[in-house]
Image (cartoon, rainbow, N blue to C red; front, side, top):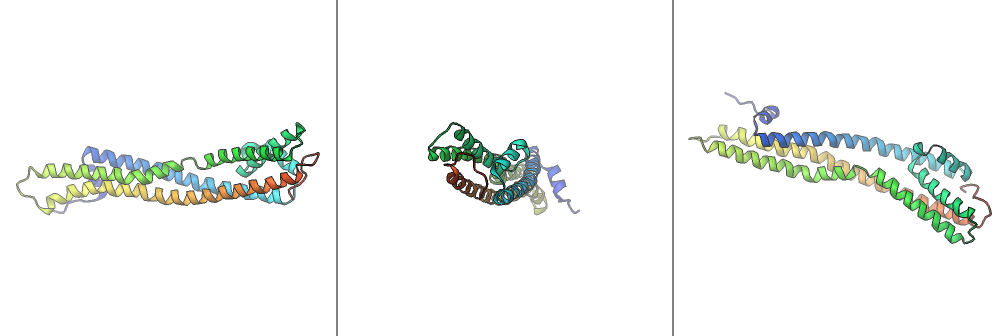
Length: 232
């Protein structure tokens, strides 16, 4: 009689510990895929919003108008636009205090942009550590389920007078399912983590470059009596 060795049957026939491990790994994989899809669309939106803001910024639009637009709808603005707004806000505050030192004006604006940059990166990098944890821990959790399943299978075989491949195979197969599910959860998480980490690094480098370029514009205009007029 041919035994049913399908994955579902093997899981249903496995010990409670193996079933618990498999259920936990499947739930983790589901959450991991949810995070992956959320990150894909989230990073795509960040890049599109940053590119749109940069086009407006380098088109020579009045900086005061850009700042006014950024403060009117701060929740819907691009991360780079919020960085710009924080630097512009600090620059204007220091100008209102009649600071004559252009270096102090520039340092204050740059510190504000750096603080805003860190906040934006913390938001963009959210849930990335979860993918790293899933990718590194899931194989070991699956291996634990396999070891436990093999122990359980050998204990059951100890009561048999004659051991054949037909009696050993189901128990070993049940145990190996846990390792397979562990890899199923870990591999996509590792691939996604590496891809997202690379994309986030590019966003960070792009934002830091913008901070330096905008700082140069502020430096050129720091000696003026009024706020800078255009990003050119």
